[in-house]
Image 1 (cartoon, one colour):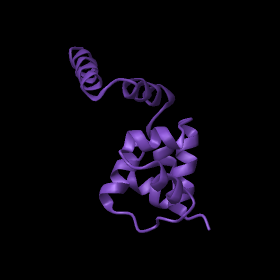
Image 2 (tube, helix red, strand yellow):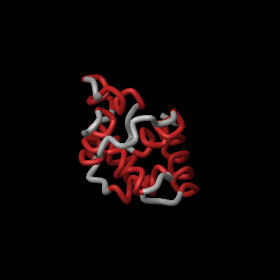
Image 3 (cartoon, rainbow, N blue to C red):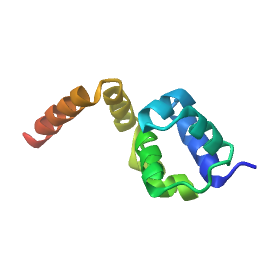
Length: 109
C-alpha cells in the first residue's frame, strides 16, 4: 500500500522529471531505499533522511510528509526551479561557486 510519504516523493520526483537513480544520487541514498519508500515500505524515516530527500527534491520536509500546500506550490516558480536544476548538474564545488557569483550579482544592485 502506497503511503502519503511515498506518494509525495513519486509526485515531486515526476514534477522534476527525475529518475529514481537521479534522486538516489542527489540524496546520497540507495536506489533500493528510494524504490521501497515510494512503494510505502519505509514509513519510519529519520529526520536526516527526510531532510536529504527534501533537499534533493527541492521541497520542504512538510510537503513530503503531508503533501504540497498552495504556498509551497508557488514558492518556487519555474525559473527558480530551472536554475536550481542547472546548478545541480555541476559538482558541489562548482555549484557553490556559481551560487556565490549569482548572489554577489544580485546584491550589487
